[in-house]
Image (cartoon, rainbow, N blue to C red; front, side, top):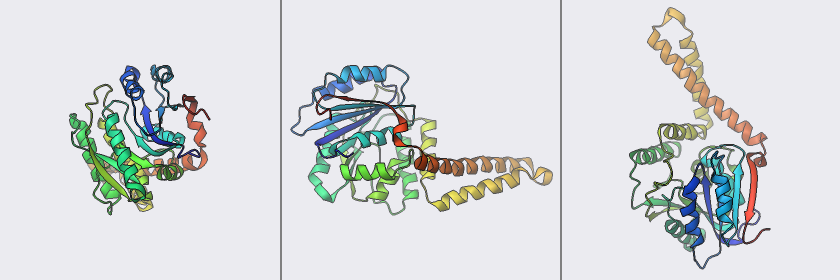
Length: 302
């Protein structure tokens, strides 16, 4: 982000198996006429369909600077957003979905609220005047808020989600501090608490398959646990040791107790082991290893 501040607004959009839904998305940017200067950063998170080629084809028609990054493999939404923040050159940056559930008009509303607040606010989170219709999305949002408040008990009353606008300085600090994966908002709200909500209207978001499902909900729990304090990691390590002792007790304990011990061993070892692996990745793996291809189109090519 050495070039941060060269444009006013940056739109960061992670893509995954977006396919033909890119056409109406890029069409909105092609028709965008605003007084502020802007750029578009698309990060293809290892799609196996035509998403990357279609993005290259469509974005050649945009007059504004457009950056298309292709991840070396599917790394998850958080990693894709982080890569987009690293490439952003805007003074104010908004992260959006690729399924039009986060409309361009609402993204501009977040950016202008952040711009108008000046140095008093670092992050503006969207809060929905209209809610997504899918029940599993609402469940995912509710679970996310509850878990985040357990991890950050002093968190001010905020609706936290992936539709957010943040200043270039905070984005740069976020990319510097964050491990290679995991929960961005947990790190972001550790950097600054100068965050507010802005009521916006959401789109229907039917063009892409919802990313929320049982696996996504479990990932939310997992990510928050991995970014919890060292005390939490020690507790899971102790849980794994106790689970191993119970599971290996033989006939001393009834089989339901041994089964619970085995489950405790698996859960404790998984969370604690993943935390160690992520720490090793964050320290040892260079950021450039995650990006396979980077394309700069339109506007300022430098």
